[in-house]
Length: 122
Length: 186
Image (tube, rainbow over all chains, first blue to last red; front, top):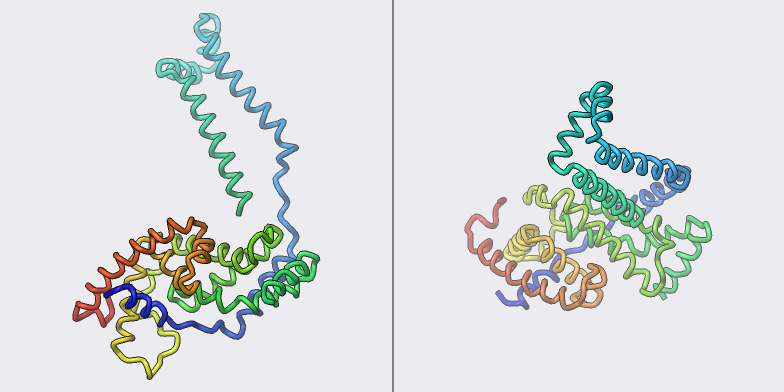
């Protein structure tokens, strides 16, 4: 079987004729979509200060927790008020948790921005 | 003339005259439905896919920059959509015995019909990048530049995929046509 045989077989593929209601169906779908109000976009501009504040608070918390956790008064106070949190910070310190937290933040940010870019193209 | 009609209709649609899009649909329904049919070999699904392609074209009409013909832009959009649809729900989930011949022709020999059936089966079994290259290339009447634009790949890449795809297809077809049961359902 050579290329000419393949070309011949492909050229024999038959065409179909769209059904009579096809144009009507497409136009109905378009008119339906045109008549519905556009979805309300997420207010990114308004929400941005909140996101930035949240991010700063998170980073500050992680930084402060790791920078001052060795101080015995802080450790004691935290162990009394939130023993589970103290245990978590201890565990994170043992495995260089700050870097894990930074890596997670960077990953989350990259996923978030790439999804936004893809969403904008669709 | 067609290209100018397309441009005029697009401008009317963008100016708010929704009815002008119907002219575009009427002009391109045949090619878009047939391109979809080559991908899925299912008439009803082909119409659904083509309808979605028109809907997306309508939504993205303002993004057509007129640096290429409207048809080029439309085919690229449709090809992209059809490929995504096939990734989502592969065509070979449809039983091949259910693939109806679009027009059963008494004039075509049984051998030709068997070969066509084997060809459909072999195409559906190809890796997607070779399958898409072959489908779009033959749909565009073997025009490399048009097919490359529709697929959004350089012409050299398309030629390489066509060559490799033909090799795989040739081997598959020889096997399928050699099998005594190949003429029956898989």
